[in-house]
Every structure is written in C-alpha cells, then in structure tokens.
Length: 70
Image (cartoon, rainbow, N blue to C red):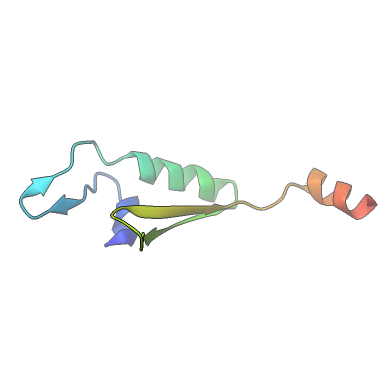
C-alpha cells in the first residue's frame, strides 16, 4: 500500500477511519522530484507507526565541477 500513497487523491484508511486531506501532496511532490531527475520512496517505520520518505536528487553540474577541482 505504500506505493499507492503517491497516487492522486489516495488517502490511507485504517478500519472504518479515513484520514482527512485531499491526497494530492505526495503526488505533486513526486512529480516535482521526478521532473528534476530525482526519486522519492516510502518505507514503513519500524520503531512506531508512520512512514519514512527518502528523496534522492542528482548532484548539479556546478557541484560536480567544484568537486573535480579539489
């Protein structure tokens, strides 16, 4: 179900409860991140309820060229 949290209008339900919200935030976030060449993933927390979101973005060419000069 964690992959579905990135779907537009998807909201997590627990039993007969549905959490409030429009379900657009993570979908929009994924769109921006992927448009910039990055990725976003979600994993279940192991220490308590909730999720951990990991965003990976490519380094910019300016940063890469600065590193090459060192």
